[in-house]
Length: 202
Ligand code: ATP
Image 1 (tube, protein in one colour):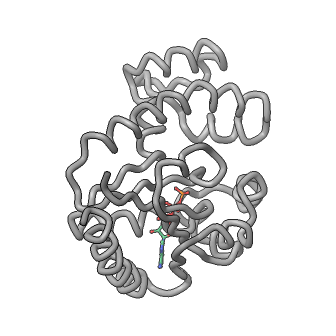
Image 2: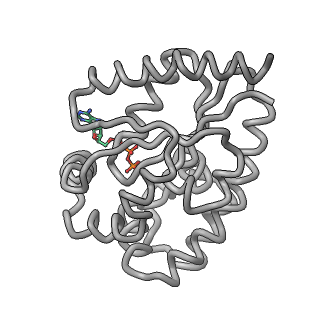
């Protein structure tokens, strides 16, 4: 089996930014956020269940899902969140297993905000954490999505604590600097992972 590196971090920490750099280096990235979005893409059978359960006020005029509204809804209502997770997580888990089996990359990145909170960490050989202080998570997420700081704070409060996440890391990227500093750290880890992948397959 090939080397699999789990990549995680809190909301707005830079998982996607880091994943994009790994992809440019030719590494296969499986992103559970992307899969979870696909689970509720237009035409998905799971999407019909969401509308039936929460109502058609969540439907845009073109039939797609109003994701901002759904996000607000589930982060203000624990029961709704649990229902949605139970709908999406098994589908995502199946796609992850399938993607890991199929892939031909020297090593793979499994990127997931819930890597440490769910069974997903069982797939990985190492844990890479993207770390920034909470204030920066809030600032960057609000800038990206136009959400209120209060919403981001609530999401943060539902995720594993920063110290606990770091404790479980084999490798840590400090993403408080520029995007080019992020790139340097990713390139350095990439060299390390290539060596580990070689050792593992030897
Ligand atoms: P989420 O869990 O919400 O999906 P994420 O961990 O994938 O978030 P990104 O989307 O990669 O986080 O980053 C959050 C925002 O911060 C994005 O707009 C991204 O472009 C920006 N960003 C990430 N890293 C840096 C950096 N080093 N310098 C400046 N901006 C950054």
